[in-house]
Image (cartoon, rainbow, N blue to C red; front, side):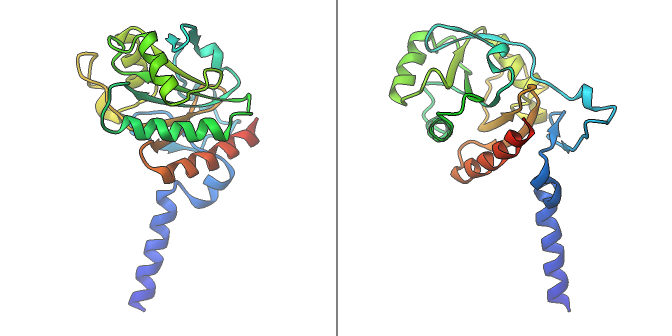
Length: 215
C-alpha cells in the first residue's frame, strides 16, 4: 500500500509540473509576470484584454534593416538573448535556434529573433559575420542590435528574460539568460524553455503546433 501511495503522489507532481496535463494539451498558458506563473485565461474573461504583451521595439538586424514589432504582427516567434563572442552557452543556443529555423523554413507565419546583449560590440558587420558562420536565413531569423538600454529594458521588463531578479537590475548589470521565449501573434508570452537543452526544442515544437491551431 505504501508503494502505491508514493507512486500516486509522484504522478500528480509530474502533471502539476507541466502546468496540468489536461490543459497543456488543449491550450497554452499565458505568462503575465516575472515569476512565470502560468495562467489559463479564456477569451470571455475580464482579464483577457489585459494579458501582458511585449512592448513595441525597433532594432537593426544583420542585414542593416530596421526591425520592429510590426515585422512580427500576426506571427508566432521565438526570442532569445545572446552575444557573438560568447564562449559558453550561446553557441548551443544558436544551434538550437537553427533547428527551429530549418523546421519552419517554409512557414511564413513563424520567425526568430536573437537580441545581442553586447550591442556596443555586436555591430551590424559583426552580426553579419556571425550569421554567415551559422547559416542564418535573414528572411526567417533576425539577429538584432541597438541601444543597450532599449535591449536590456525590453529583455527584463517585457520578456522577463532573467525572471524576477531581472526586474531589480539596470543596464549596468550584464544581461545573461539561456531562456527561449515563445511569443504568440499578439505578442503574448506563451512558453519559456531552456535554450541550451536539445530536448526542450521538442517541447517548443509541440507548443508551436498548439499555437498554430489557435490561428
